[in-house]
Image (tube, rainbow, N blue to C red; front, side, top):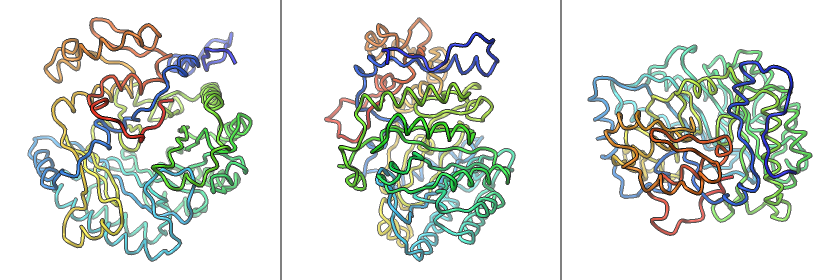
Length: 485
């Protein structure tokens, strides 16, 4: 393996517009540079990051933020996130907030409390309840049955005003082991128009090592059913760096995924953090690929997907050139939030359910993380908010800067100056001075009016964003972050 790669094959044929866009956005893979700069760092699904939330945050702070937004002459639409925490079995790699149980009565109790929270949030947001985006995550949202799902959606529609199907983005995560093609048709009829499903790896030995036996035929049948009944977009998740995984198994999985033709593909780096996530303690450390092999896996994924026509969006996400995610990036309306990349940039994100995180105005909140605590707060007639953060002006500015870098790989100083009434070069003089080594390494360029991340720098975008993070280095960082590559 040579030391520098570009994941676009040489071809003497003229490039189409879509192919040219792919070539212009595909990161250059410099393995020596990645070895040197790979470090622990945030994924920046928010700024400040969730580990900065405080227990001193008060519900009254959240209520005041919502009241301030309601007083504005114009209101942004809402993006709703609904957390269903239950799974019937544990996947050893999982780092999500979930409840493992085969006792379906627990879901009945949970849904009752969830509807209480929805009603309380609806009352709080009176006058600004237009919804353009809905996402069901977990856990396993399809743990609840058709009747329960229909009842929950009817409840949501009674409290909020949803945009028409052709405008709204209504997505749900499904576990192919828990649904049939018939269930997929029901979900579409219930109003979902986007589907996300986990594959991780098709290799049976890898599946066995992580306790997720998921037959290929079962997964492909779900994807085909989604296309048949008119889901607008299908997204799949893969993971590299799992136990017993190899370049050969990744190659075979990628070939099968590409043939299945999903609209979006996310390829996550498995971060082995057993001190934070107990299920990972069941993984045999000596079965994990070494760091060098993981880098080769990453390069292979980028190469295979871009050669197959997928556009590299950023971080670990790829999409077809005509997918909304790709179009949103081209049009400057892509954003990054707690669900990853989102096509609806101008929304307030309201989340309901145990452990759910909201981003409303200049305020973040997170609900109680255990069912007992979540239920107890609602029994007391309170919103189940456990912690949160009120952003100051510097936080809001840096959130915008980091978000633009994560989504678009460049900064226009004039636009930021006009928005925030600052002189970017003066305000961030220290940060700009800290980019010398990255500039020398070809990760980015600076001029009088802009910062532009190079194709070589795109894979190291987290490192670049960390320079603008005012919280890093203030104290000894806990070992809660994954490697930036």
